[in-house]
Image (cartoon, rainbow over the protein chains, first blue to last red):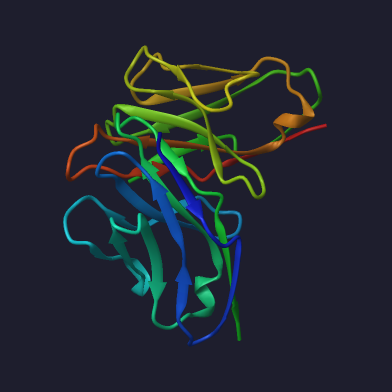
Length: 113
Length: 115
């Protein structure tokens, strides 16, 4: 079975400091992994995706994630937080039959001015 | 490009009423999904479809029905609404899984309140 665990439900950072949002996955095969962002009262926007190519994935708005198979992790990072980064972030894995997506419970990011 | 469009965006229902949420996608995707989002629980899959005329149950299907009569549309029905169905509903679509086409595309959501 596939699943993802987001290790922090809330993260607060000061503007200009690094962001780290943690995600661990469970999968018996080489997964497709994603990070989505949801701003208040909005839909979900794809930040980045891993699909068995480069293990370090660059996304939009300066976000990156590194796939570490040995640690079954796919943590999201950004060197310097901006106020506009305040949102809910979801780590997602696509199921091995390809027809379902499994969501983590989300991490709410607060950016303090 | 419209992408994935959901209607309506907001709705208030009385307990026992019925309604249908419509999802339309213009990307010729094979797969479509209905999720519900509740605080602290992420998105949970209600039903999904892998092609026109097919549907399957997800994690939380009870109280909902779906239909996919046309490839571009996926309807979610509530036959007898209950307060527990108060939630934000998201529709999504995706292509068949290949190395290049892996992600899902989401609509803007429908905020449903059952009183």
